[in-house]
Image (cartoon, rainbow over all chains, first blue to last red; front, top):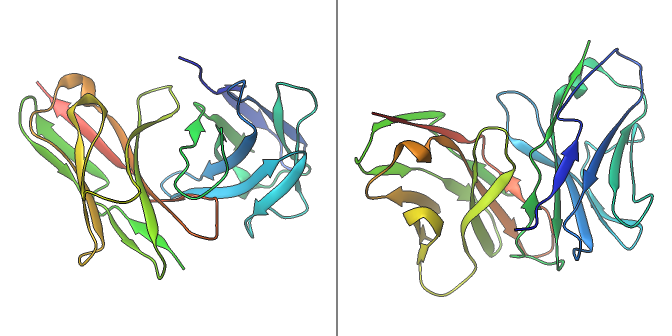
Length: 115
Length: 113
């Protein structure tokens, strides 16, 4: 069964450094998402992306974050200057269609630790 | 604004016993409800979803959930759990006008031998 993959599974970085989290969505999916979960808290929506544009973003997704689909298979989340509070599990998701009630398929996550 | 509450952070249960994982939501518009499961080192996998129609929804691995609009709940149930059901379970809601999911904090189900 096709699945969403994410790399790396764990990343440790120093505060102020840039990190890029990578995702390979399911191949025929056109809609992509990033979520994060700070330890002990809820999974929170960050951004949705379609046709090389952000279609929706949360208030968390400020100027330090950016997303990109650099080629036909990868979808990346860049955090420009990491802060301690960026430490979290980051989940990528993809879907065939874009709409309420559509199933999003999630990857295993990247655990980011900012020191 | 929408929100999802999963009151139980951990639920221990013996093998072959029934289990109910609770989920309550709040929303001022029509909602669509989901349960996802996360096994160790894996992604979030869809168990079941409610879009409309019958309020009792059956999913994979013998799980089912009942949508109760008056109580704004979508509790997940399984009549007899297995050791392999040990995982984290997430309730989520989406609603008209947005494509994002709103998740609860998750419930860690631990099935004991």
